[in-house]
Length: 354
Image (cartoon, rainbow, N blue to C red):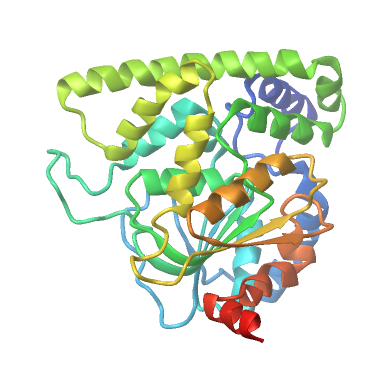
């Protein structure tokens, strides 16, 4: 945690504990420190200079021109550093991916309802300032052979698609995710995150009971959703534009009354539905998960796999023994051989005939 004194970090993470990840961004995940220190040094030594990977800023306005070779989009985890994202891109290039785009997943944007609303409203691609139809200018409006979402990157993908990205892909790798848009998921993540920190931060999950912490996050999210609901109401009166923001506005009443099933359903449907062009092969969804991962609910993983299958996806689970988001560093075969092993419908028919 270079660059921050211990007292400042303690205060920051105490605030993080009470807000459920909503106010702190830019901190490297403690669970990755042991990996990051080694990988960062190796990357600097091996790379020798600036990475050739295309880094996508959150406010990027220019479309990325596709390359001729295989393409991949990586949406990073909460708190991922530039060196870590560069290293993931380097792993992809070594695996033969010529066109690699990496994008961070800011905590302040992805971890609270108001962050979702502001992010999606600020994108509003597909419409110009006057609200008329315009050429789709979202920087991720293109096709990728593979999209790799890591931890909070799942929600980032949801927001990008809500924000107007005409994004299609053949394979979706869900690495240590989904972390779903509901208070229970983020409270669980926050408590696991703090438990890895040094004292006094690590004491917070022990001193603050889970029901109290969860009740606070529910209340805070409910108030944020009420704000979104009000904004949506006035936006309707004034003819506000932005289809994604309108979707979040319509979902706000469910969040205000703690009915997050509708929000989760919309999130999963947006991510997995429409990911493939009409008439093409089904989306291949690879869930790379450690069932014992304290950062996410394995029950949520299983429920999401069932929903993805119901949406017509080819789903495969790849259990890994690694810690949160470390599979790509420690067990890359789980990331890169899994999708190739997914059977096609033709393979299934041949297997039944035999």
